[in-house]
Length: 330
Image (cartoon, rainbow, N blue to C red; front, side):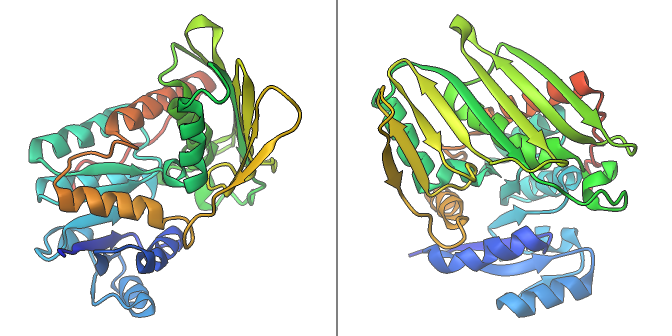
């Protein structure tokens, strides 16, 4: 069987967890890693058994023995790496949030289409087995017509102004690290909203620390969402239908258990554990798509990523957040 050869761009905490899950992905191997720090790239390669390391993003983009790049740099840096990779004929898996503006997201989608290469946002939630089961139940009419979604995701982060979460140039704030999850969850269930309302708070550095979001859809349907860097929340989601509801137990963005209520208080608990750390499922999807010559994932298509990014654009506008998009060139 052919093997998809992966390169890792941005050897941080999330990348380390992702790389560990390659052990659960058939026909895929991590063959290279790149950082702006040669020492950091070499240390990551040594720790994870990756044969090649590079001290620049350009070098890994130009490596002819890399088929697909997993991009895990800070959000504003996704744009330049993804565009260069697409133009070099490489597939890309871009960590959420895909970028920090809808315009940059469309730019990458267009570049991938023009180059004829695969591109996908690393929204691991959609590939969790419990979420796959939830979508099957909804499609089968287990809770009737879906009318509303509720979801929250919050954590008490350090208030140190030097922390990455408070750096505008690094895409700091609640929206791009936390808010993207409930927004994407709502888009997955209800589609693209007709209206977006938001209320939030900004830090002295100008990044958002919290927001409440109300998405409006046709026929009175809605999504009530909350994200925060200043208070911990359960991290639970709930989907309401005309014949029941589904609870997605904490943390909803990578759950093992959902509870189905068919119009009564007696819930049916359904547990479908994830494999490894939970990243293997999206890695399998990308690997299979790349080896099959597909340009997009049916589970996480670029149109959904664009729709979510547009909602975040509107939220940012409403709460006074001005995201700093990164350059288009490496």
